[in-house]
Length: 285
Length: 137
Image 1 (cartoon, rainbow over the protein chains, first blue to last red):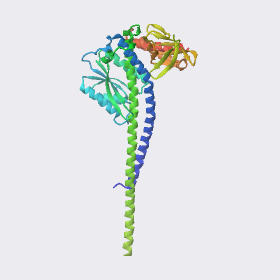
Image 2 (cartoon, rainbow over the protein chains, first blue to last red):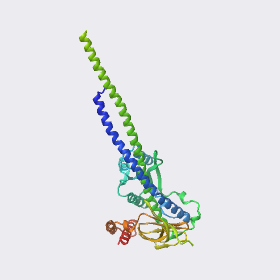
Image 3 (cartoon, rainbow over the protein chains, first blue to last red):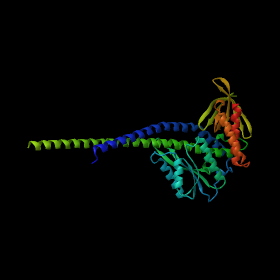
């Protein structure tokens, strides 16, 4: 049985841990609000760019753009694996990495583009090749997104990769984050076959094809940017939950240990009293 | 005929402007494009440059001038929408950063072959830096 002193030390160290997890919980709570605000601010842009893309697709019907054609056959798939830079968020990063790994096992060969330090570490562990790495927090998100988009676009047009796939986290709700695997390029054909709306009569300068040539890369860039915002928000949500649980668990442990310590102390007192009583009886007897 | 048209300027991080405009001029890939109210439906890509608009705020006319990065402009019967990566007003421009961006981009571009996507990318960076410097000066 551990002594009172041992228990007291353990409780003390647990209290420290609890204080840290509590602080991290509060920080995550504040950061998630910021991340959510940033994601909301990107909303109007998302809506507008989707609408423009739809108008364009409606207007031109079949277009010849590399992004709309299947990529080079037999070429490996380029997978953008997107995680947070830091851990301490439960299984958040591990879940994303597992989704990416699963995808790589199911399909043909894969080339990794790692966004986020945890993705970088995971990609290095996995057997396939990593061609590009960046931290989620390197520079402003828009710059990082542009760079990632430029890399995958160049590789795709050069035929080094046959598909661009994004593995990132969806923030379903504050309590649920789900990793998601999406094929970004070739752009899904169903979009191209959308029914022509009344807005279809649009003039394009210089030509629909020329505008599309610029809009598609921008669309890819923005999708990556938006995924980064969402992954970050999901990360803080996961961290908030993990830290709340950790704080609660530490509290429970402290309660249990305090009870054990009190019992041990009481046992020691009882033992001492019995010894005194026994000693007195022996003397008087 | 309506004298103004709803005008929205959107960047990925914010709505830079939302209101009524009498005229919007942006630098398209084919040169400057001016949009007046009741313009035919229209969609074009924008090069980095200076976007000018005559906007009406609280009943008084105002000139809006912003250095904008690459983007798109769409005119529809219900309004004009401009999507750009970044839009900076005169006071938001960091001149030393713009100069630095200009030097960096020129240096990177000098080692690239013209007519390649990389070259065009650097050209856009140069144009954006120039637009910022022009507006700030």
